[in-house]
Picture 1: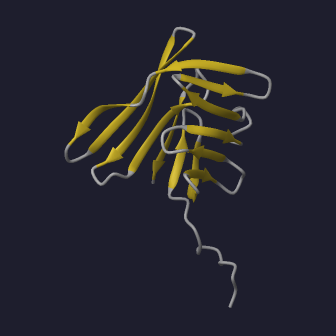
Picture 2: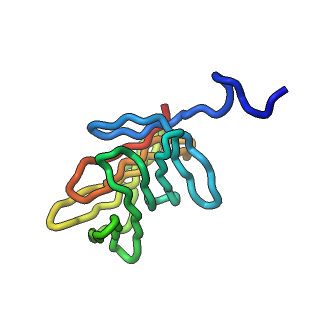
Length: 145
């Protein structure tokens, strides 16, 4: 008997992170009041229930970022830079009785608008996170497989 699972056993990466150039299977891990999405290569995305708060090791091209949200301001902290976007409160933008609800947060950075989005199914489970890690760049998505 072994405490270490053999290949083909153990946890399954049943979510994935995607963007224009990235597709990475990830494990959702409940940690206190957050969900961390991670993989074996060190990728880590921390989600507090409404916001992505930390991102590390997505790829060589994507810099690590810490994101804070306070009173309508979303601050993106990189190694030597801070970018600030003005954001609305999260609001319910659409509800589909049999399908679920979409929540959105409208943000503006340097006159460029972007919308973060959380989609929840009819049972109340999150089925998609769409978020901007870097103002004026592409969206990232977290979805179950």
